[in-house]
Length: 90
Image 1 (cartoon, one colour):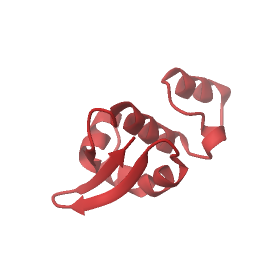
Image 2 (cartoon, one colour):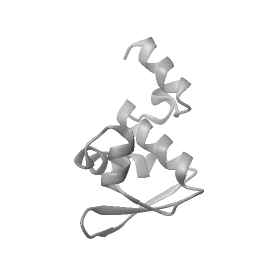
Image 3 (cartoon, helix red, strand yellow):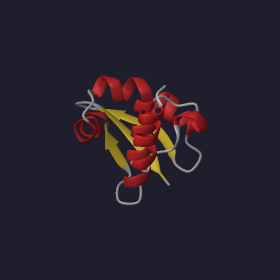
Image 4 (cartoon, helix red, strand yellow):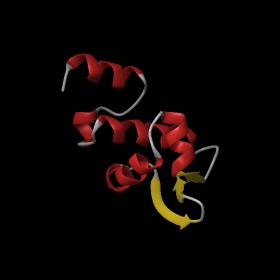
């Protein structure tokens, strides 16, 4: 991984990839959830994807690793109706 990429991730307020063992994409998703967990409890993969410039499939495929790595937020697959919904509590 390049130093430039790590610095860019750190500047965005996202947890360092090395410290959590997350990929850059997973770190972006976790950062998004941390930033928004105080305002919302339920997140649709599609809407997370829209905000982060990813596909809903990419979000869903990475949420397992995000949920395991997150220590300050709880991430639980909540439902599937017109897309996967995740319950996130801080």
